[in-house]
Length: 363
Image (tube, rainbow, N blue to C red; front, top):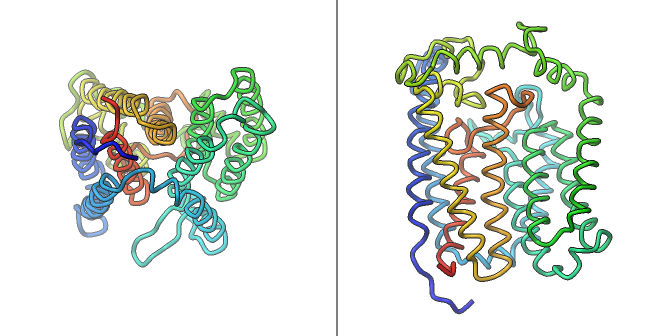
């Protein structure tokens, strides 16, 4: 790489910090009631600020590391991510029915979050080096998706369908952009639907979630409870919202409102205008991320940028779809806004890599 570095994409930086700021405010607003029971209404907010600070530091570090370095470390990094996924199944702690956390003192990490970024880096490297074979199902699609399916399988053993879906969706997007044939994509789509149905039928609780998705009122105090309470939050928000801190659903009606369902509280307090503004900010990130991918100086940078921005957008679509009742309930955070350590830190780290790619883009 001989092209001199320019300044990183300023719009991506600004939008990321705006979303982070909104997230900190909403974490405080949505968690204060629950946190007060712990003796400190700022309990979750303080931790979110720690995660955000750590993420900002890693973002600025990766923003200044030339992105092709990750090509060299992609394979060792992926192997390390696989190691973590195996370890968490052995000694991980269970949270909300999923054995997906490795505890480190008062904090914990989610290996599946590391795998999302690690897989994006590995696929960018593998697809770049094997581009001539991508049109072949046996030489291109099977080897790349074999690695993805192995990671997906380990994540499903936790189980964590939300993170697994983001990982798989991002990977297929990258393979398609690299040159996958349309007929192969359609075949995988049919296979994916069949696999998704199989996963649902294999676990009764997932079938209950589908039933609750179709008719949440069939079990309003059980599987339909979260989506009903989420809609109760979004509906009264109206156009302008009830005002910051004025949510009613955060008073122990909506479980963990500062996490997967933070968008519900945001819509209740800031209304349609607030919710639409957040979605427009994500659309702005999508546009700038696509621009970085298209103008990247090489295929590796283009695919890596595609993986990072695709991972973010797919996660947003699933999260917002769940809280608005368009998708069945699955545990997935809203990037930059939801409370969380691994998810927030790793997403900011990925944005740093994207920003470094933008420094070399042909703009």
